[in-house]
Length: 203
Image 1: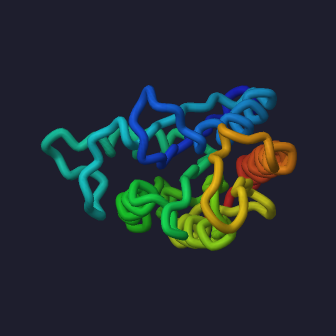
Image 2: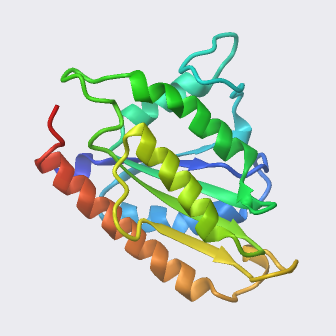
């Protein structure tokens, strides 16, 4: 597969609707920029801007906007799942996205493989308190169950540390590490996506 044809989808699970500034979006942008350098076409969905009712089916009808996002997921080789941390957990929209993606476990491709096979995924997490590793493990575990391949070090995060404090956009503390890790995340996602394109998981 030509690198120029590779596609990525970013699911930004911030609770803020556009045009409010999203700290999660700011860190995810580091990954997006690095993927763009590798000629990956990136599409971002800010889930708070879409009508996504709760459920575990791909299409719930009556104005459900998830089917369009689902179609984009199936058209992409790379998924970046980005979420803030609230009370030590992924956002409610992140959980809702995973629940809607649960339907993908029983959806198969032309060779009878789960549709998430031969796609890679990584996680971006922001928050002003600790808990990022817990959130990463929750998201990565769910995506692995759905069928995504999770490369080594396919994540980045930022948090200020224990206790309340400034958000990502309000301080430069820790940015260098988070951004360097984000660039590595992008490189690893791209490398494994290329490997799977050349030698897919067999049916």
